[in-house]
Amino acid sequence: MYKIGMIGERDSVLGFMALGFAVHEANDVEAAQQLLHRLVRTEEYAVIFITEQYAMQMEDAISQYKDRPLPAIVSIPGKEGSVGFGMNNIRSAVERAVGADVLFRD
Image (cartoon, rainbow, N blue to C red; front, side):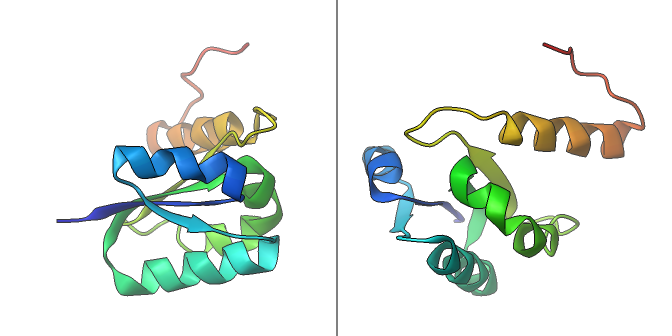
């Protein structure tokens, strides 16, 4: 059975432990990037969530895995709230898959 992973700053990720996520605290972007590569290499994760604050600075690392079926790497808002980065990535992925932007604009 695959796991669901969570990478981010402590205050943003601890609550996900209660949901059964494998929570990985990162103190900075470098640590988050190393965690991402390590989790992908294990091939144990179906989904890895990364807080937007880190994901924005890790686009190159994340893009290495965008065409792989697993894991899905999804950015989510952190404790500071959404900056729109995650939704833009979802919109881009849907556009690549469908060939057009079918999501409603804000």
